[in-house]
Length: 329
Image (cartoon, rainbow, N blue to C red):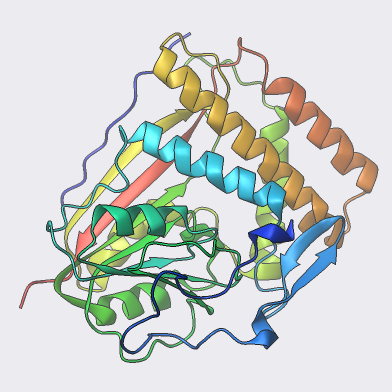
């Protein structure tokens, strides 16, 4: 297994809810998951935020307009980081079937479908929150990606972005992906490793984001079964399951606009807003349900917001991008 690291140089509402398939063209052929029904198209409002109703409680992150804005920023941040690219995997120029697992609001799936008109692109998510107006080669399916897949053993490319850390069982899903890829097909996983770092020791030990991670990590693990530290173990897991040509690149994502380089300042601004919105999302439901005092949570959100504007703190988060291939026939 080859492992490559790229370290970026660091210096000083309901209008969103949509049904399953394109308005331009109906879906052709057999889908790989269940079809959209009224039982999965509702939403639940709690703690001032909107959540998916399908398998209520499975995913503790909202699916409302605030979350849409966070996902849009996250999409733009990764494109900025990768120089406009949507992925790093060396897939062929005319893929036929692509699946985006945990597609969210669907930006990645839609842009990939526009890039590869030869491909049928399927986005799968727990929430029917994708737009109605789509390229004719895109389908969105409401389902749990950790369930069994049916009649789907022919994908050229499977993509997961900010999903692996919110899975109950990465091993089971990666096995399923392996089984449902064509020989020679690829998987790519992009995720943040929640370990705030600096190269010059400017992060105080009581930094609010460190305190936040110390609060939320055991809650997500014990209540939901989510392991936020899984990104570092993905290459070994993929190798164990039979994948080959495994690559990993790790980027240092500035937290805040402290870098001298203009490009890194833009990325750092995205990262700051995305993480602060994530703090607010976790404060809205998981931390409250875990029994943390609401005033303490509010103080943490306030302190995190203030500290993120301190340019004397040269903090960053590792972003792991891992891709691997099913052996060719």
